[in-house]
Image (cartoon, rainbow, N blue to C red; front, side, top):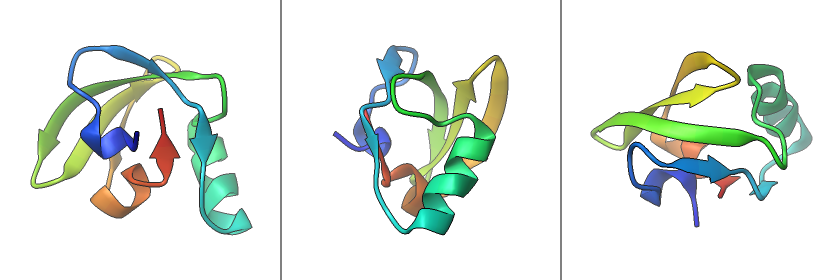
Length: 69
């Protein structure tokens, strides 16, 4: 399921990242890699704040939908 549908407060494992190479490289530079863990902290209008590698990152709805957990 896409990260946008993941419930808040639970730890999820990244299964796959979709999109063009530039998008996948950008997300990897933020710490979103296959097999890594991510936790949704909060959601506002589809945009997410997530914990990844002990860092909080804000993602737009479009970017978060490319991360499958």
